[in-house]
Structures are given as structure tokens and as C-alpha cells.
Image 1 (cartoon, protein in one colour):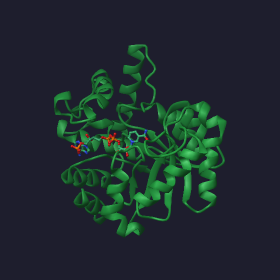
Image 2 (cartoon, rainbow, N blue to C red):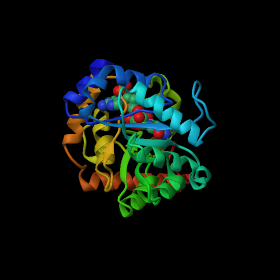
Image 3 (cartoon, rainbow, N blue to C red):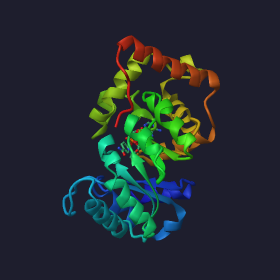
Image 4 (cartoon, rainbow, N blue to C red):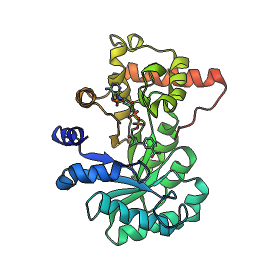
Length: 276
Ligand SMILES: NC(=O)c1ccc[n+]([C@@H]2O[C@H](COP(=O)([O-])OP(=O)(O)OC[C@H]3O[C@@H](n4cnc5c(N)ncnc54)[C@H](OP(=O)(O)O)[C@@H]3O)[C@@H](O)[C@H]2O)c1
């Protein structure tokens, strides 16, 4: 993992996203790249009840304690961004959780605060004065947040990070998915099947082009600041960086992906909301 993280930074990646709830992640980042802290924007998430952390979920106590633990684990004296890790709308409206991060920001422990999540709650968070960053699902298979969340973020000058940016590689069959992605990618795989588009329809050569298509679609959505992609493979890092360097998809291809999503959604009679 040290090789992957150092390789990312060496190749120009400058934002690392983690969470208190990703087992072992904060510690591993601190141990492997804590010594080159100035090379990256560091984002973590908090608010959930945690084993070994005092406080009820979304309380000021748990948020403060989780942040202090994150600083120690990440071997730093500040985070660039701390996000509330997908609380519901009522919790956001109650104010204690956001207020805890405001205090942390005013104390210099974080530079900016925000919210990781989707749909109505993310749109609500985007118009709060103190919220500077939203992390939300945007991909070829997850387009609701393009209107519902990116638009209010643009209006309120809020930075946006996409999560699940390449739709968990939904084009891979379930048998090719590994670990948590087996179940996680299933919903997107079903959506993509219903969308019934192929790389050839979009002017590309074949299935090997899906990662490039998926990343270029997401990364260049208006208002998006950064696309976060998960990978365990150095080769995929190189492929993804090369894809990003190609710029936006041709307008025609991006339009076909938008249309395929809308048509498939309408045909099912469902509302395809942003998925957590
Ligand atoms: N609620 C939240 O706050 C929340 C929720 C979800 C995600 N996130 C954040 O967003 C990040 C990204 O989301 P994600 O990891 O769920 O989804 P993702 O980036 O859309 O997909 C990751 C999957 O794509 C594969 N992949 C990456 N590059 C590839 C390539 N070039 N060719 C083929 N497969 C490729 C990875 O497999 P390999 O390992 O084989 O490359 C992995 O299975 C997470 O790491 C996390 O930081 C936050």
C-alpha cells in the first residue's frame, strides 16, 4: 500500500480521501505518507458511533473525539477537510454535528468542513453557510446528484468531490468483482444493463474502454472539483491518470450516457436516486 500511495503522489495526485470508519485506513495513510503531508489535500469523515471513541452518533462529543483520533492516526496537526459521514437530513437540521465541525475549524484542526452523502440531504448541506465541501456519488450509473446536488453547490460556491466515480466498475460481471464490491456494485451493474449502451455506441473500441469512459464522464461534470477513485492496483492508477488527461468525453458520447440513464430510469418507473 505504501507503494500505491507514494506512486499516486509521485504521479501528481494531490487529494487523499479516507474516513474514521474505513478500518485501518487513517493509520495506514499516516504511516506511509504522513511524512510528505504537504503533498496532498487530506479529507476524512466522522460522526458515526465508533468502537473506542466516546460519544453518541452525530454528537459534538463523538465528532471531536473522532477528529482528535484522526489527527493522531494521520500524523498531522490539521485536516484540510472533515466531512460528516452520511447523516440524515434531520441530523443536519438539528445543527449539533455541523456546529461541532465549525468549532474544530475555528480551533484550527480543520481548514474546511462539509458533508458526504447524496440527494436531499446533500442539497440541504450545500446551502449551509459553513459547508465548503460536498462529497457525493456521481457516475455513468448515478446521475441524480448532477442536477440535485451539483447545481446548488455551484450556486453556493461549494467544492464537490465525487465518490463511486467510476460506478464501482459496474461493467465487470459480479464474478470479477472482489470483496465489498461484489454487493456494492450490484445495483450499478443492474442500472448499466438497463441503460443498454456499449462503448461502441459511444465511439469507443470495446469493453476495455469502460474505465476511461466512466472517469471522463464524471470528472468533467460542471462544478465537480475532483473525482475520487478507489483502486488496489498500481496499473489502474496509471490507466486512470492517462484517461483523466484526455479531458471531457466528446459531447455526443456524454449526451448519450445522460439520455440512456434517463430513458432506462423512466422505463423502470423508479426514481434512480444517488446511492450511498
Ligand atoms: N459515503 C461515503 O462517504 C463514500 C461512499 C463510497 C465511496 N466513498 C469514497 O469514494 C472512493 C471511491 O469510491 P469507490 O471505491 O466505492 O468506487 P469507484 O472508485 O467507482 O470504484 C472502485 C472500483 O473500481 C475498480 N477500478 C479502479 N480503476 C479501474 C480501472 N482502471 N479499470 C478497472 N477497474 C478499476 C477498483 O478495482 P481495483 O482495485 O481492481 O482497481 C474498484 O473495484 C472510496 O474509496 C471512498 O474514499 C465515500
